[in-house]
Image (cartoon, rainbow, N blue to C red; front, side, top):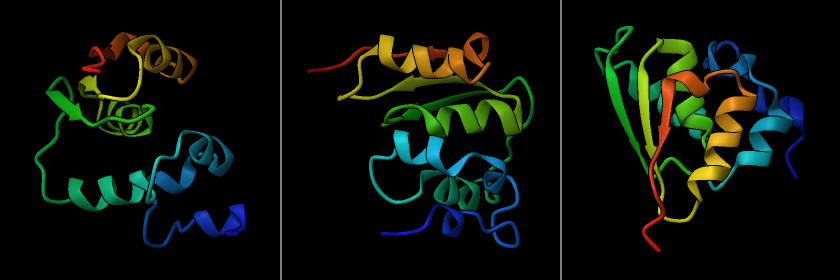
Length: 106
């Protein structure tokens, strides 16, 4: 198993490395979503106030990251996660005012 400290790579992922690895693992549903998003964000023109759809948002780590790091408004939607569960993650992360959770389709 990967040590928690191995999930911190400030040289390659300076923004996402500031997040608690244990918190991220608790929300994990696959490969490190913050690393993937941080790589992708280099090719996007994200700016404060912009509205972003986080489709397939999982338990909310990527939505929190977008709201915190880019000050965007996020509409989060995932087929497998109840809106109430995602809303609790957003509120606990202090970004609930910038996120809207979508309904489960199942």
